Image (cartoon, rainbow, N blue to C red):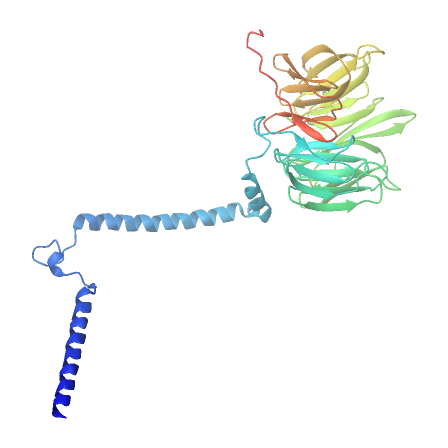
Length: 441
């Protein structure tokens, strides 16, 4: 029995020694949280700070605090100064503008195919092709993909485009409705009690709807960019044309009425918030077709028999008569006025004239063919014929021509000036080859 006890005691002792040895090994392998003094660079085993690196660390610490303070100040200033621009819509545009397929150049633009009709209206809105027909309002990227669409019922659609919105209204006595869109949705839709006979849209988003009622022959409803009614101008005259200055601060109205059997034109400008017109004149015997603000702030009025160039106060400075011309067609752009007339009663021989904002003739030449559209962009005028597009440089009178497919409807321009020919179901970019400086081929 004693021998058994002694043997058990020895076994327990062996186990204790083995446990102690394992513990010692684990303790030896365990990394020390304290760096041994003997590996310090100080030979005397005393820790000393390096003054050079201490100074650098202090400077970095100061820079960190200064950077944080500047970032805070910048954030506060930006949120205060641009609080009105920090909207969900702008964030949506920020994300959308990251798409590099916008309409910028011929290399980035491909032919767009869509469902449209012969009465479709076209424009370029924020880098995308806007197409409006009787059943759909759509935006197409340059790659051809549909960016936005909204069903509508506009029997005679008209399209206006500005930097902020695009406006579509149904002209005539059908739906009597209009809609305002951005790139993502329909922002407002309104149906009036009487037909819409015209509209105007400013770059800042304010717009005017022209209508009438049982009492007044002409009513201009002027809204701001938030769709609040600024003013309602009621006239006992027919409003033929309405235009807004680019900043939306002034409204121009051209109206007509009868006086003793003769037509009288009334031109009037009204500023935002004003109770009375800022300028007003009457012209007897002339029938206006359109009145527009030019890029330099002047006003151009197209009458049935002449062009009138006016200063900002509507004082006529220059006039060009059409009395000896036939079948006059004109396009008033922001910088150029293009006038086309037939030279004979039979045939398609035409004379094209281009004028500046002051009435100076910049170009005159003869062209033949059926003219579909006249358009201008900056210093260039474009003539869309049934088989070609002619570009005219108003600065030197040079011409360039590109052949097109038949059945074209309209011509629109990207922000870079790239012309796009629009058909009933497609839109095709047009590239003009630059002519040599000496005029040789």
